[in-house]
Figure 1 (cartoon, one colour):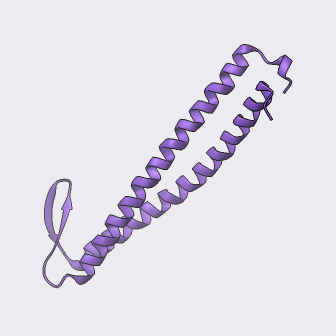
Figure 2 (cartoon, one colour):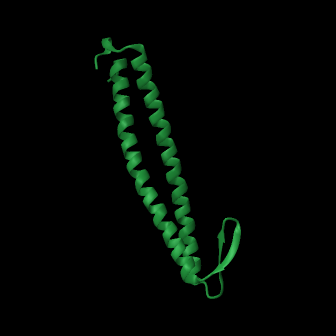
Figure 3 (tube, one colour):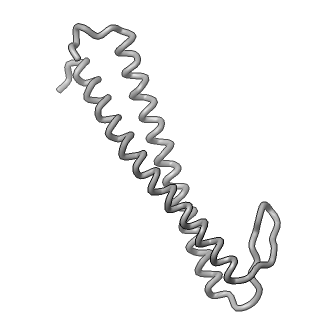
Length: 115
């Protein structure tokens, strides 16, 4: 893109896109942190279920119910798998957003004449 051919609305659009990408990147990184914390919680819960020798209780929607050790372990395993899938998806999204951010930053630098 040539510096002289850019319309003010094109420059505003590029800056707006850049800000949107930065916000999406921050949101995705925050979600990654939250999911990693959830994964640690699930790992701790899995360890506790493995050690359990008596009754096992599980909280569902604010109520606590008795369950079997195997069902609790299976539920935790399923939730961990879901978190792992979401983390993998977020990792791909973050990589794509970083690439888009770099492209927009380069375009902004080109328009401003920076090297």
